[in-house]
Length: 129
Image (cartoon, rainbow, N blue to C red; front, side):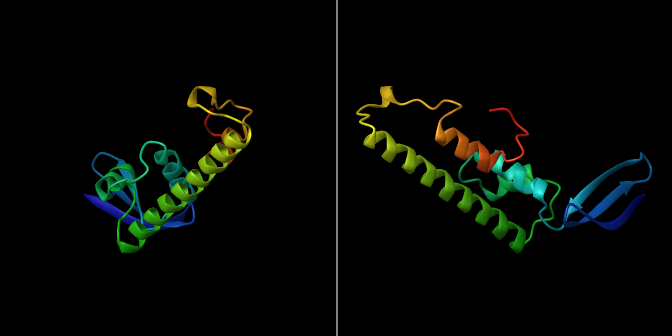
């Protein structure tokens, strides 16, 4: 026997499915929450262009529709734009500093590039870089 209930959690409508026989349950989100955004930002470092199948696999708690898919695609587009702008700034600064080869480049924790990327993708410092 399965019981369904609706509720709002993390700024997204969710549908809770409870299997009464074994007491297990899971939630299906009908919207994307701030936690989904955080997960997407981390996923970005795994893949810059996720397929729809990969998105469905990583966001299995989301009921996919055209709007949800569009929002995820938009997020990844924004992630790529920010990431490549930061890389370009780093490269231009390196050239201005006289760097002539890749062996002269390094990114440390106190580097502006690391700070900018960490601040954007790991704002709450949930993960140690």
